[in-house]
Length: 259
Image (cartoon, rainbow, N blue to C red; front, side, top):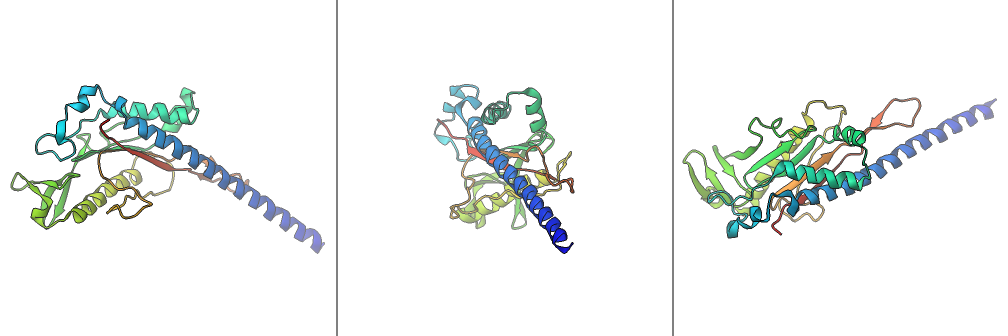
């Protein structure tokens, strides 16, 4: 009798490990697939075809990437960029069915474009105005008791005095300015992800960038970037005793550069 009892425990444990193991395998497989597709899609969104014309880029001149004092920002057609992202993303997943694509889009809560002086974030419906009524938000950060509009360069705008200055004028070196702005952008992305509407999972996420480019495992924000976060279609647990769902989440990104 005791032998039979222990056999039942062994069988139960074996099957439990099998269910858990298969669930982990499925998550790992889907996470890797999403990651590859996200990177491919982000690369396409950052490419030449995400812009209206060649002139759209080449007319930016030598001032490319030095802030906004002289209107030298690089314009980005954000809706066109998202379209190109989806084309390559679904192609890499071999997902041609429109209904399947629509289902997966429900679990892609964030597409973001980090510009030199502002941040744009789109929700699951590719709506840019759920992040901010203006459809974008400038990098307005309080430092030393005053509010400044920061850029990805050392050029900042003194809002109170209505003048452009350099970060060094307020005691910020390159490393300190970059760390301050990177933390701000990470906070904005995290808040959007974790406080979004229609959130089905109980997961909270934290987007992390390198603050000083020293960490070899993390990318830093050194220019305009397109980012996409995919939580993934929920994967049901294979354990018949618990109704659980898991998410094979992933993030992909690519820097937008002039060809």
